[in-house]
Length: 152
Image (cartoon, rainbow, N blue to C red; front, side, top):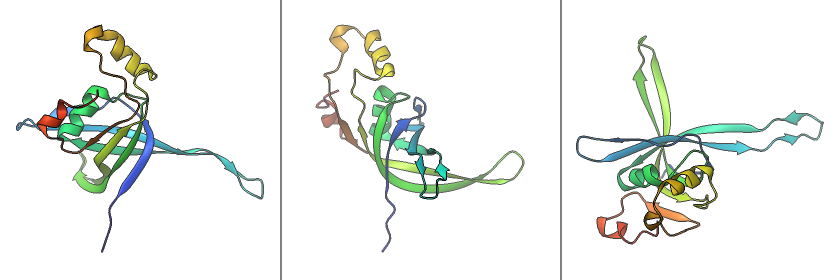
């Protein structure tokens, strides 16, 4: 038996980059940062804060939700699978990329508190603003009927 499960809680490093395949399927990519606090060892040695950057890949409906609602600085809870791929760069050197393919995403930044959300909200007419929701969750592939029931 084996398990490939990644759980991340961190902040979005840049707005999602969303592409649409020829078949109309959306793919979003962006990074998320997780940080370990600084601390001091018993012998007095100080260990500085350490930040790790994780590359995320979201597909289909989840990618479309990220395109509409995820912005740089937002706090996200992510569950997914780690995948590594390789490619040859322009110089013929083999490079490896590790990515988290997201199965579930929960938005933890309240809609009206993030600076990016405030900019998006102020650009919309009042009648087009979604209901305020503290936590927003989506699975990888929501069916079309359930999209009408989303609270945002």
